[in-house]
Image 1: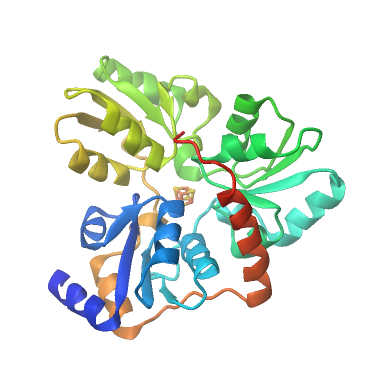
Image 2 (image 1 turned 30 degrees about the horizontal axis):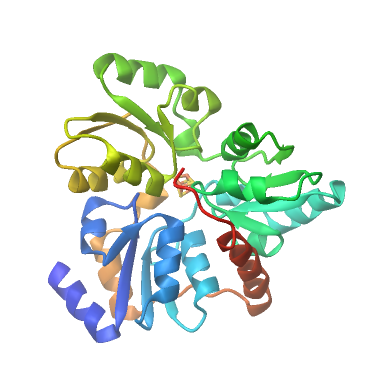
Length: 303
Ligand code: SF4
């Protein structure tokens, strides 16, 4: 099956991008693995005509926003994001009416329509810098992840109006889970995704999105043990890139169900049929692109 995927990829002039949370075998067949922003940037600069986005819908939409001339395929159309589903464009518009001085920052884990209704976007890696970049005196409406918004507020001291949304996978981790894992691996450092609850972040040695976690792990000396509080899919890449270090999941249930929907069979079928394609209506695309471009203009941090 892998051979057939590789042949078809060449025939279709396609590139396969896989998020760090994808199944290991899907990560291994991909040309590039990364977080949603890294993959969108790769999509935008790709020479190929077709992008097979192994991730969830908002990521494929972001690729379609950044490169409308390419055909973007999402192998499993039902692969959505429970966090992105907590916000609609109409809700964001209403919130803006309630806080007319506020600047709306949309986490990339939102639909294209929500991005279009926002002033600028952010990722888990640059949320702190993006919130800090907002002109003082303006509150920030932070859509969609409450925990990430709260983390950015703590780090910047800015007035952040939080959205009532969270990632069910990350928000399920408790401080007790971390303490339990620490008792099994007392020497291990803890790295946690900022979508985790504040009491979990308080126990972490390092807080970062997946790209920041990979960079942090690479800097640690050989023999380092690390407990990872994000989707287990990242551990595949951490182990591959750092064979001289040990990585353990903070809990066994840190698994995003929709990120695991995509199989090799789905990737193959998508390349055979060139479906399902993801497109974004032009008026929405242009406004969403503006919010993404404003984010890109803000200097990124590794955290
Ligand atoms: S891990 Fe959470 S935020 Fe990421 S795709 Fe899954 S549900 Fe959405």
